[in-house]
Image (cartoon, rainbow, N blue to C red; front, side):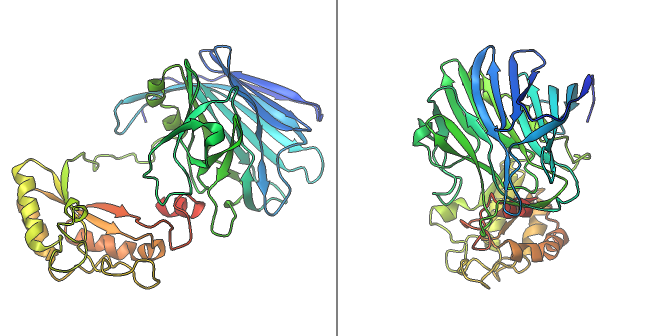
Amino acid sequence: MHRIKISGIILMVVLSACSKEQSFDIYSPGGDIHVRVITGTEGIFYSAEKGGKQVLLDSKLGLMFKNMEPLDRNFRVLSVADTAYSQTWEQPWGERRFIEENYRQLRLKLEEIKSPRRKMDLVFRVFNDGFGFRYEIPEQDGVDSIIISEEETEFRLPYVCKAWWIPAYKEKYYESLYRNTAISEMDTACVPVTIEINDSLYIAIHEADLTDYAAMNLFPGDTSTLVCDLTPWSTGEKVRTDAPMQSPWRTVIIAEKPGDLITSYLVLNLNGPPQITDCSWIKPGKYIGIWWGMHMNKFTWSQGPKHGATTENAIRYIDFAANNNFDGVLIEGWNYGWDNDWTKEGDKFSFTEPYPDFDIVAITRHAASRNVAIIGHHETGGATINYENQLDSSFSFYKKHGISIVKTGYVSPLLDNKECHSSQYGVRHYR
């Protein structure tokens, strides 16, 4: 990270222990976006404006638990910190080399008025093109194992608005056509959800820094309110964690033109700094692959007279790639498991056993002689436990044969026949 400029102003105010309603305001660096947070006996709420136009009305905040009472009301504010932050950092790759990160942050430290006096922080970061907020539960006595049953997070719109969305649960995969309907006509939707508030104001609701937590979906609470719905475990629980913990950022990009939603770097900034410091091994490339023939019923993934991933076919693709300036060839259907019924326990893929008609030694040698990279393929069929048990052996197998690029696949509606892809279980596996 190349840090160009950092500036900060920190204001810490210790407040009296009172239960009456209090409000706290924070503005974007340019002053155009205004977020207000209200705490009191009735709950915690936030609202947002841009240029004096209402973006979100008072929207509820809070966490609900399976193993303890909710954290959503009856707080005293122990302290408030208002911080200004500005820097420019360098991307290891991407369409822009330098990214501006310029925001003001409001941190509210809250404590329950009555016993057991649990503590929770609310953190808001307001940028010139929107804002994000998250929940944090610090380490404290009496709060160890945490099972979140739901977030009470709301997004209350000022009007009955139209949204672009895809369903979260009713279709097998995320490969769905976007709907454009009134919010009241929405089903539970995956984020991002894009909303036209009026003809000169658009927002995109999403999340950032999704780490060891369930993905956020949204469902219509009424004709103008969207409510958070966390993707559950198969047991119905949403998040299993321990203190200290923090939720992902809930993000709202605000734009006057739809195209400005695309060019926002708010979500990227809230994802935190790059964790990969040495990017020299990451190379862009153009590749072809033995897979489209399967979709056109010319080849099969499994063994047989029409098997696509054969030695002869792979060498033909490698030669085509070399003759036409492609950097690599992706080969699917090379390994045992494609003949099996993926839905049955025990019928799983092997990632170290090629089919007999796929001579990996001859293929990788020929690819090296033509300066073409072989892109390996690991289709898991959604069997994550089987895959995790083979990670060391399968990657060692590829390394032995000079293959350093791998594509993974998860063609199954559920992971291990029971867990949603966007659940905390899935997020843990993909990380």
